[in-house]
Image 1 (cartoon, helix red, strand yellow):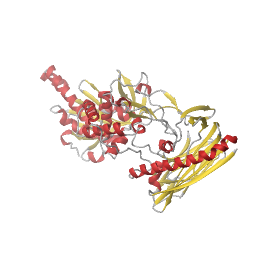
Image 2 (tube, helix red, strand yellow):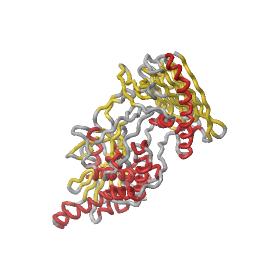
Image 3 (cartoon, helix red, strand yellow):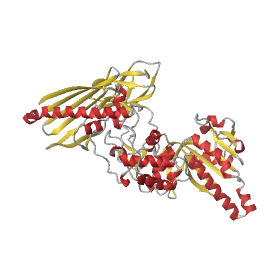
Image 4 (cartoon, one colour):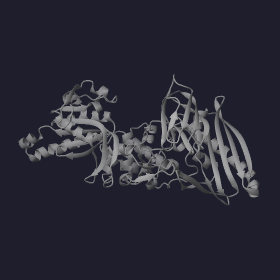
Length: 600
């Protein structure tokens, strides 16, 4: 076996942290370099995750290789290795460094190519020359993309700025959005943005559109963009998929077309974990534009690079009983070191405290860090794999990105209830949700109202009241789950939205008087009467709190009232307790009288 090497250096006017996010997109760089598209299969491995096997054609050669986990250190290094099983080469490795160079940056690109036999040795110089030329072209394109996205940080997704959509396509989106009720001033802008994206964006973008990412990039309300994409799906312009996310590596599994499939137990090929996805963490709604005539998902050129895990700031593979070090830029916040899939430890980064390095020890059963607080900036992470097995170690942001439109968010949205009432969980499937705000309201004195006004008039009042409440809930980013007689149950992902909506209920329901109760906590998403419903202690307590309220009163448990997001709204509330049958202790609540309610 003979090794051939090549090194090249290119300079650019962007600083390293700006250039990094496009250079580290290994899929785009591999594509732009002119290397072939790849098809992946996975071979099971005893005692560990499956081994990814890549298949591709390079000229007349059918190539097959094992692809170890990619190494990266934000924002300055990414390294890829391919170990060939057949063909004229035994191994290919590329190590890319993004380094400061005055006010700009330079890319140092090093390649190793191990040749198999005489044919490989003859071909190697030509292959290296082609790789060098392709790399120069790919990095020039990466620099151009970096210039177009200067405002992005290393962990933000990229949304391309595209030209305006054609009139016909915009009109089709406007027509589809007519299904949304109630309307707001945002729908025309959203329709135009969606039309432009579908018409002009590249295949990678339209193959997996994430509503919260788009909304944030467009500076439009998240709930309205998500609702518009749901309406466009129902109108035959977009296709919806529930993407499953591995709780260990956060890798994306193949999407499922309906919630009924989201409760199935799946296995992550990348890290070997078998799991049932959590509704509010591991199931994300995404959209594609195939129904608008765009192509299927684009080919894959490199899988598992930094572009698939932007919250992971460093990754390295270590053999058993080995050591390694990485340098990674960390801002203040909470982080986790993980030896995938099941050994991890948390640490905190602070601006003005802590050590400048982090020691990590990976054992057979657990992972330990030498300190719990680290100084922000460039941190040296020293990793000792003391275990008897190989380990893939990651340093990641501890909190999930807030740009995931989870199944819990989507199903707590009125637009989903209105447009996709048939998309429910499978029979017997239940999903735990860590936190949801549940609001119950009912009409005070309804029995007497029916007696005094007659059934027909009373029923008309109740129906009008229900419609008015549904509009308030929809505009408040919530969903009405069900109505039972004159009682309404609604849910909200954000407690502030729940409080704001409850404060508007009294005006919407006039001349009727309501009594309202709400509570926040874990609950179970389930199927009931062929609709998506919620159950559990949180739901039960919210219903009982509502029954304890008087006419014109809103009772809010401290689980909601003490949340920092709502504290400023409830400054005029009266704190007290209510005694509920079956509860061992009085329940602490904040009482707000509807007549005094003010929405800020």
